[in-house]
Length: 232
Image 1 (cartoon, rainbow, N blue to C red):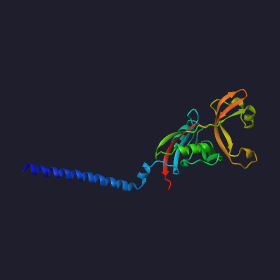
Image 2 (cartoon, helix red, strand yellow):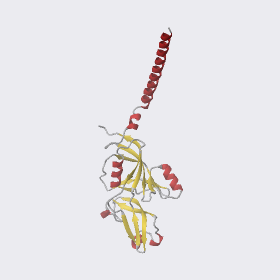
Image 3 (tube, helix red, strand yellow):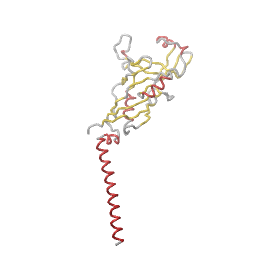
Image 4 (cartoon, rainbow, N blue to C red):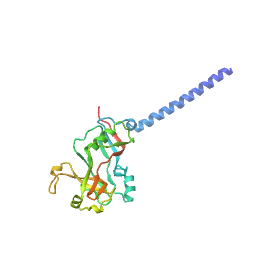
């Protein structure tokens, strides 16, 4: 009789355990159902052809932010007197080689607001970001190298500086300079209608004859905001 009671009691315990498991499963299904397809998207990784919205910060050789879409970072550095530029997030097709020399980016500065001339993100830099985000998930972060095998420095003589309303005596190593850039240098002139862009360069060396300006950005920090998967 005691064994029979024990068996009945054990059966009730199992029924209760199974009922709890079923309840948890049902609750899980309800949560996933309420989330729609967003939970699937959060697990997806970026594949070639997907379109991603990207938060990014371009950095110079010293690691200093030059351009960012991170509003908190921009506000913090701008309040400290930094010349950092702000832009909206980038929408990028993954593993896509940009066909033009320059990808124009609208930028905002504390002094001028939204600038008339877009910032010049080089096509090779866009392509590096596009390739580098493949494999990342939503909220994934990565530092992508933008190192180029092409020289990205210029030597400006005292005369060249004077033509651009700058003096050699006022130049200091580490100083940031806004440079005018064109996607068609042959037509870039005072009366040309060729688009003009802005690139921030840094003075890396100074001699009695002039200054060396580096306008490369060796790396970019990215965070994936969202992913729109390409239709298969």
